[in-house]
Length: 142
Image (cartoon, rainbow, N blue to C red; front, side, top):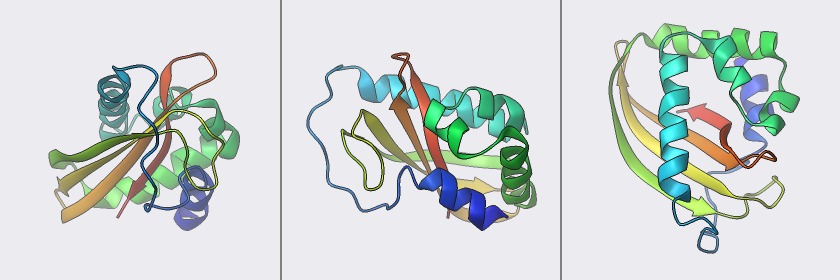
């Protein structure tokens, strides 16, 4: 189940090898996207999976139902335990991602440590949604 949901949601980011896009239209795109990503991660860290789905971008919500998301993210995150440390590795703006429609995206990677996993890379991808707000469109833990 975890693999299926990750594949569906990550269809939006299809690959971690992307070409950097043009400069963002909004000069504050990267900081705004980072702020949204941190808030969204706080929800997942607190096991508020339904709320994380509700605050996600429309394509994310269209790709996976709320119950399927709650099940999948719970199966993926629960065994890891509590977040002990999360450090920003990179945050890059792009206007295109493989397998996703052109738009405004910021691909953010964190080096993370959990109680039961000492080293993980979290990739979270906010996008500028149809309503003009930055919202999370993809999340992956490796």
